[in-house]
Each structure stands twice: as structure tokens, then as C-alpha cells.
Amino acid sequence: MFVPSDLTTAEGCAELARIARERLGEIDILVHMLGGSSAPAGGFVALSDEHWRRELDLNLMPAVRLDRALVPSMAAKGRGVVIHVTSIQSALPLPEATTAYAAAKAALSTYSKSLSKEVSPKGVRVVRVSPGWIETEGAVHMTDRIAQQAGVDRAAGRQIVMNALGGIPLGRPAKPEEVANLIAFLASDRAASITGAEYVIDGGTIPTV
Image (cartoon, rainbow, N blue to C red; front, top):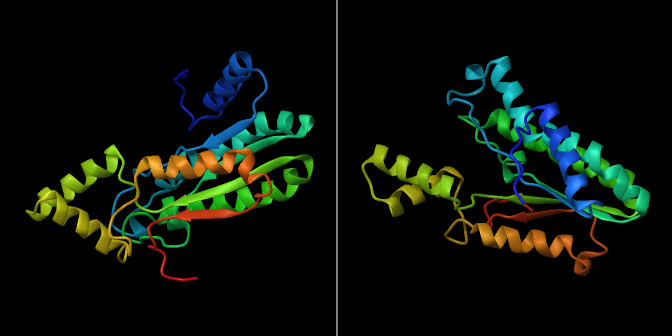
């Protein structure tokens, strides 16, 4: 079922939560996938208050609002799973263009950890999935745009992006279905003792322990 809703607004989140409860009844699994950035390049000085507000409204507040609406019923029945999709940029920001995005994702990660401490004793698991560069349709379009600007083919454009990230030891970005498989595992009973943890899926991009 698809429900059109602007999750960057409090009203949109409330409407989605209401429809989810009406159509599905009890909510058992909640996966927060929303994210992205429209902030300009140019470093921190290029970011206005409005840019910061948009990044927070897109990358942090929808999870906060939907959790507030839906997680209490999970806690009341003593079971449920919440998965917050963050980003490796919370630990590896790119200052030229993603400072606000990275900061919002870092806030989401901290919020997620705090929520896990509060609701895990009530039977609700809260887990973070932190992807690196994922080759979605949007990522392919971005690669093509970079390649065109540089006057190279798609493979070379792909390498430009990987180099900007400091390299991907695996040699390629992850595929969307690989992230989906990780999320499916974490939401399943096979991960019944996992909560409060972060799972990085980045092909080895983050160079530290």
C-alpha cells in the first residue's frame, strides 16, 4: 500500500501514522528510510538557517515524529522493531556539500541509541543501519552527471565518487537489495537479541575501527 505524505511536516507524519493504524492495526515493524540532501556546495558558510532546517526536517524529525506516534503501542504490547537508517556520513562527513546532512544523521543516530535504552526493556528493539554509497537510481544519475561534467564515462564517474569518499575497499558501491537484506534480517526473529546497535554496510569505506 502506498500513502502519499509529506514527512518533512508534522502534519504529514501524523497523517501517515493515522492511516497506518487504520489499515494495518497494530504496527510490529517500523523502518525509517527517509533521507537525502538538497544543500548547496560551498562548505559551512554556504548553509543558511533554511538549509539547516530543511536537512533536519528531512533526515531527523520524521523518525522522531513517527516513533512518537507509533512506538508507544509497540511498548504497550511488549514487542516491536524500529530500524533507523542513518549514514556513514555521521562519522565521515564531506565538508564541501554534506555538513548539514551529516549532522542531521548524527543526531538521528544519537536519538536512536537513546530510544533503544528507553524502550528495549519494554520489548521494542531499536537498531541502526548505516549505509555508505548505495547505487540507487538517484546515485546512478548523480554519477552520470559527474561523469558528464568531467568529460569521462560512467565507470570513471563512479571512480570519482569513490575517490571522494576516500575509496571503497570492496571496489564498488552497495546495491539497494543488499541493504534491504540486512534490514530484513534485523527486523526478523533471528536478530531477537540485537538492540541499540549500529550495522555499517559501506564496502569498507570507513577507514577506522
